[in-house]
Image (cartoon, rainbow over all chains, first blue to last red; front, side, top):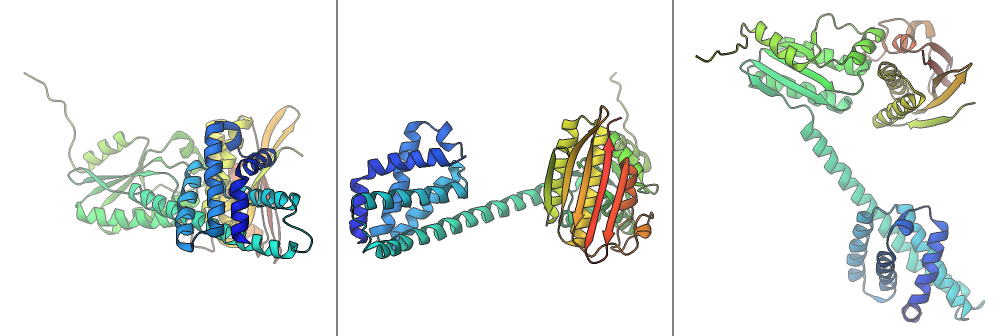
Length: 276
Length: 133
């Protein structure tokens, strides 16, 4: 019965695809069918159809490879999972309708065919959901690593002076990382002054402030001074309104002023050299 | 009722989503950068409270207008344990989680109007309003 269906689909592929594309265009909100050229649509549709057929009569191994290949392609297209699900459902619907029309499916064997369809479609859905989930997990994992690499590195700028530029949202995990890197870095670089630059932190709420205060306290414990730099005017106003006490901190508006201050603390300054 | 949009708070990252929404809404309504920062920070506090104390809830942002002036309301609602002593949480420096204890009184100061309804064991609804001056 499977083989019969596979040959039927292959023989009538053109008509199936036309009907399927119509159904997809009517139903879906996706932009895929509106923005892609007809060539691309036809090519992808055919690939999609071939994958659908391959599950009917090819060995398991080959199918899985093709499924992986297909889903990764779909992911690259930016298709949503609901779109792919719709595509599969509509495809099955079209095939079923056509089989019913040419009287291959009758009232007597309907149950059997429903079973065949279920066996055909369900593993495909499972496979696609799984592949999607894997791809997402991988993407998220990679982004997490990328984010960690970006976040919180302590940069020695002068002897005894280090800067930690903070960019982006600070959550609990990052706050921990900031603290660790800060303390490790202070000890490693023998820093006496550390400048925490929050120019790139979009929101400073009580939690972020709390983490910064804790970090500064810890830095004091290992024998260095901590300075908060890069406080934008709107952030300054918000901090005041929130009632956060940063009186124990030296704070400056820009990193440049912070560096000047830090140099002063370590009894140094930048001088212009006159050429003679 | 004005135009309303909402974000569910389930994870720490939803806090970021909520304040992103708030910032966009505030910008579109026409708030300046300082007020945008105030509103975003207030949302951040409220969303974090939901995440910390109730586990889940939602932040809704509603645009409002009255007599030619415009503003937004932040509605933070959860079905958490409720707040036993409202007066206490509105005091500066009170915290049950080891934080700064500036969150709730801070939000009240950041916004123009602040209302809190809480029922023990049923949940909390906080409405905070800000008008364009």
